[in-house]
Structures are given as C-alpha cells and as structure tokens.
Amino acid sequence: GARIPLPRASVEDGGRALPEAAPVALEHQVLTSLLGAWALAACSAPEAAAVEEHLGECDSCADEALRLREAVTLLQRPESLDLDPALRTRVLEGCLERRPPRIPVPEWAASYDAETARLDALLQDFGDAEWHAPVRLRWFEDDGAASRRTTVAGVIAHLLTVDGTVAVGLGLDDPLGDITAPSGGPAARTEAYWRASHYPPTRAVRAPWREQSHSIVRTVAFTGDAGGMPVSYGDFELPLRDAMLDRAFECWVHAEDIAEAVDYPYAPPSARHLNGMIDLAARMLPGVLAARRRAGLATPGGGPHLVAAG
Image (cartoon, rainbow, N blue to C red; front, side):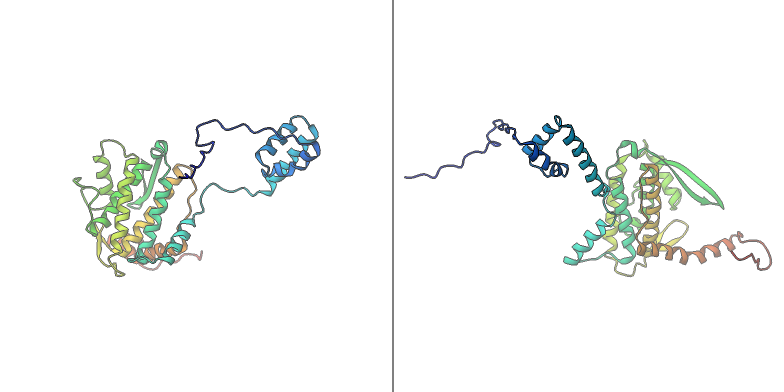
C-alpha cells in the first residue's frame, strides 16, 4: 500500500554545514536609506552585512552611521544590571493573591523572613575572595565602644549561632551541637563556635544558616498570632515575637556590614518592617534605663539636671 513519506531532516539536524548566505548587492541609495535601521539594529543579517561592507568603502556613509549610532545611545536610557529590590515582594504578593498560604507567616515574623531572604540573595554569587573579605563588627560594651575583626563567613557564623537561640526556643536543633558555650549569651555562643572551628569559616556556613532560617520561619507559622513563648538570651528573655524582630534587626545590620566589606549597595528594610524594629527598641528602652539605675550607672546628682533645648 501507499506509504506516507517521512519528514525531511532539516539542515541543522543533518549534521551538515549550513550554506553560506550569498552577499546582497544593493545600490548606494538603498544602503544609505538603511543606515537608520542599521543604527537601531533592525536590519536583517544580509542587509547588515551589506551595510557594514559599504561603510568600509564610503566615507560619507561611515560618518553618517557614526552620527546615527551616537544618537541612538542618547535615546536609550541606561539600565542597571541589578534587579529591582521590590521585585521579590511583587512576585510573592502576586502569587499569594492567587493562592493564599495555608499557614501564613505571622506579621511579627515577616521582617525576619524578608531580611534573611535579602541577605541570602546578596550571598548567592559570592566567590572565595568575598567570603574571606575582612569585616569589623562594632558594638558598645561597658559604656565603651568595642569591635572585633572577622570575615564575611565569620559574620554568617555569628548569625547562625545567635539565631540558634530562637531555634532552641522553638524546639529545633542547636547549631552549636556538642560545642559547650560558657553562657547562653550571643557573644559567648559566637566565640565558642569560632573557637571550635578548626579552620576559618568558609562559604560552607551559608547552607546551615539558610536552612535554619527557613526552619525557623516554617515553625513560627504554626505558633499562631500569640508569639508569647520565651526565648532565652542567657541573661534575659524575650517573647518570641520580639526575638524575631531582634533577629531581623541584627540580620539587616550585619548584612550592611557585609555589603560594605564587598563594596556593594544595600537598601534598608521596608517601612513597615523598620517600623516594627523601632517599636521594639522604644519598648525596651525603659527597661534598659531601669537596669542602668539599678546597676549604679545613672547620671550622678541629687536633682534634675536641665540642659539647653536642642
């Protein structure tokens, strides 16, 4: 019986060399009219080849082509290669509008989710040189400025160990493992982790920090809107909702330290997340001042000490 012929194999699939395109022979007037399209990269390949060959022979057309190319650069606005910082938020909002999460993240944990995601995006393309870039951590201790020199990887190790206080409070694994810290404070936990490392921390520290932050966000989604369970910082405790704001604030601050070390711009948190961090600091301020008075660190003097306005 009659058979349907098989489709013919294309030149690309046959393994044979593609035929060379024959050069297009165009008149001078036609080539001159194509200069505008050539400057906008709108010519076909044969036309572009013909125009470029003609430009090597005709000085007047070459000058006109150069002028048109410079005009095109003025019409095109330079675009940054960096992604829009708000792109992730818009994509997530669009997805959640179409399918709301079955177990949403509480509002008081949203800033931690956002800041860890922003820092993880910053770390994504780091090479070995960036991971070992020097970073100087600065803080205040005993009424004086203190600092510590480390690396980008060392900063992530610091965030890993201190975020571990929240992980332990939620019943997750402690990143210290078998490492024993002299106290449960953030500084003691970090120093113990650094001392126990046989080598300086490298890019390998990103994976456990990233997995721990994801586990914390997943777990707090099951705690409801209360967030009142205590999280121990060694010498004091914070409710879970405030501990998450504290960890979001420190993640942002150290992300800026890392960005400064590698000379990369880094934007502050969104307004609503920054509002929550400032609110936490304002609520903690009276307790901090009361603790200073009890420790004898209040300003000496028997009565009020008035100063000039401003």
